[in-house]
Each structure stands twice: as C-alpha cells, then as structure tokens.
Length: 366
Image (cartoon, rainbow, N blue to C red):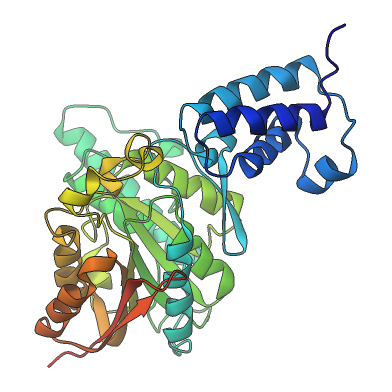
C-alpha cells in the first residue's frame, strides 16, 4: 500500500533525512521546508498534521530537501529571511541577513539624532525638474554619438533605475537624479529628515529596517554587486519604502552625488570583513554558497573598512554617526584607525553572543 504523505509524515521523513546529512537543526529545517512547499505557516503545520500533500507540493519538497541535504542555506531555498520586524526576499548571490546585523541597526537607531529642521526629501516638483535634466543630457549624448535623440516618452523619471555605462556622464547624471533627496530651504513642501548612507547594502536589510522603524529617516544605499542592487530594490518596493530609500550601484560611496557630502547624519555599513585566513575555515553552508565579494575583507578583514573610513570623513556632517559591523578579532585595530582618522567617542558594541561586533563613532571635524 502506497504511503499517504501528510504534512506530519513528510516532516518526520525530512527531519530524519536531514539529520543523516549533518543538518545541525534538522527538525527546524524540515518544518521550514514543509511549510514553504505546502504554503502553510508553522501553526497550520502543528494544528493540521493530517493535511495531505499534493503531487506538486511533494515535488517542491523533494527539490527543497535535496538542496538542503547538499548544504544550501535554508534562506536561499525558501527565498526569504526574517530581519528584525521585516521579512526580506533573499536569493543566491547576495549575503543572507544575520542577527549580528540587527545589533548594528539597534545601535544606529539609538544613536541617530532627532530630525533636524530642514526641507523635504523627494519633492515631486524637483523630481520632474531632475528628470527633464536627465532627458536633455541623454539627448545631447545621443547627438554626440551620431545617434537619433531618444523619444520624449523614453525619458526616465527621477525613480528610473536605468543608467549608462559606469563612469559615463550619463551614468553620473542618472545616479544624481535617482538619489534625489532635496534638502534645500527654498522648497515648498516641508518634512523633517535624517539622512543616512548605507554602504554595501546587500539585501537592503539595514536600509529597509532604518527607514521602516524611523519615518524621518531617508537612506541612500549602495552596493557594487548588480545582483545585490536588484534584490535590495525589490525589497524596498515590496516593503513600500520607495519614498524613503534609494539604492544605487557602485563602489562604496562612489555613486552618491558629491552634493550630499558633508550632509549625512549617519554612515552605516556591513562590509566584507572576513580575514583571508578565516575564509578557508568558514562552514560549508557559508563558504560554498554565499558570495566571496560580500565576505572577504582582506588579510586582516579591514581592507574595505579603511576605504569606508576615508569616505565617511567627507560624507558626514559634524557629529555625524559612523557605525560599522566588523570581524570580532579586529575591532581594537579598527577603533584605533578611527581615532587616528579624527573620529571621537569611538566604542565597540558586542553582538548577541557577547563577541565584539560593531564599531560606533562620531565625526568631529577639526
């Protein structure tokens, strides 16, 4: 007689299989995979153990279990990860959000200033003006290349994510329009605002959390990876934060227009910080599946941090907040570098496991 595959039977089989494959939490993994395959939550799984799985659900579950048995992270398989009060989309090629980074967000929210009295961000009239300027530049570039000018209907809005080749005039103008955060006193609409730069944004977990938990926060987030930028923008849209968060592609602060330098209330980052020697010791679930670009921080794990430190000096307003997540073994060195660079009130915050994890400082221009 053929076995009747209920959610309970599938759960038991999956847990046993994953345990044999070395899963450290096989029951929890099995619960998540069954719930995702059957499109139910954990309460339904517990309350209705005799619910039969359809053929399609069983096919999805077989694929899920095979991938998990091979060591692939659960978050990549289910396509989502919890982060603070949010549920974020995740996928291979982009770093999975972690609880340590929630500590970074908590620290930033605690230390952010009250919203300064200044004029509104993303003013609609200014956005139209920016879009018209972009269209004019693109038309001129097309003429110079011997091409016909683009149709008026093709002109990007200030929210258009398209950009020309990196380093081109078109790309820089598009980035300027895309990052449009109007803070000038002459605008008609008013809104209190705290301006934050989130470098190495990855999935956008930091930017989205800050913007969702503080309505007065506006974030310009950047990442070098095209995959990360696409995913972060997807999360921004899904969480309805498009009016508070802009995501730009480029190296650290490079895509952020010069006119914002010296005006940021905070520079936040979770950069690649795993030292070279530690990379080889990472669990297979991390080292074999998550991108090296988001992990490897050089010999001492501080290569990217040093570059962020220099950019933050230019980007931050007086007393602006600087907060970075780093490798637990090198926070003292990172703190010394921050002091040498002129930062004040430098301190180290431990993560939930009691390990040094987050560096926090204030920029005090001499």
